[in-house]
Image (cartoon, rainbow, N blue to C red):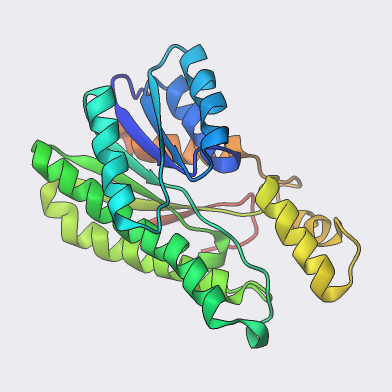
Amino acid sequence: MSLNGKVILVTGAGQGIGRGIALRLAKEGADLALADVKADKLDSVRKEVEALGRKATTVVADVSKRDEVYAAIDHAEKQLGGFDVMVNNAGIAQVKPIADVTPEDMDLIFRINVDGVLWGIQAASQKFKDRGQKGKIINACSIAGHDGFAMLGVYSATKFAVRALTQAAAKEYASAGITVNAYCPGIVGTDMWVEIDERFSEITGTPKGETYKKYVEGIALGRAQTPEDVAALVAFLAGADSDYITGQSILTDGGIVYR
C-alpha cells in the first residue's frame, strides 16, 4: 500500500484516533492537513508527521461550521499543492438516558457528528470536481452506527445517520469517480472512552473502569482496540486497493458487532 504524494485532510487530528490516522497515513507516504478545534494539540502532531519525512500543515476548524470546513480544505490545497482524500474523523460522544436528553444535547451532538460529516462530504466533493479529479471521502462511524447502545441512544442515532449519508453520497458521487466509505470502531482506549466510562459511572453507580472493562471483555479478539487498529482500515480506504469499494461502513471492532 502506498499513498505517496497524496494530500489528505484529517479532522479531529489533534489526539486519539485522529492522531493515529494521521501518523499511519504519513507512514504510507501522504502529506497531511491536520484540523481540530484544539489548536494546542495540533502542533505536536504536525511535528510527528514531519519527523516521518512528510509535509504537514495545521488549521483550526470547528466541523459544525460549514464555512470552516470549506476553508480547511482550501487551506490544505494551497499549503500542500493538492487534495486527494478527506477523512471526516471529528466527533463527540454522549452518555445519557434517553429520558434525560435535552434539545441542547441533540443540537450539539448532531451539529458535530452529522452536520460535520455532511459539510466534509460537500466540501471535499466540490473540491475534487473543481480540480477535475477523482477522490476519496472517509467518514467516522461506529459500532453504534450498526447497533443502538443503551445510554448512548443519541450518539447511536448520529452514527446511524453517518451510515445513511455515506450510502447516499456514494450513490450520488460515483459517476464523478468519488468513493465514500466509513470506518466503524469499537472500544478504543482513548480519552473519549475515559469520558464514556466516567459518565456511565455517574449514571449507574458502577465503579470507574468497570464499564470499559465489561465492554473489553466482550471483544472476541480479547483486547481493547488501539488508534492504530482503526488507522490501518482508514489507510486501506485511502489507497488504491479500495478503489472498487464505495458506500460501505466497515466494522473494525475486534469482534463485537457482526454484520
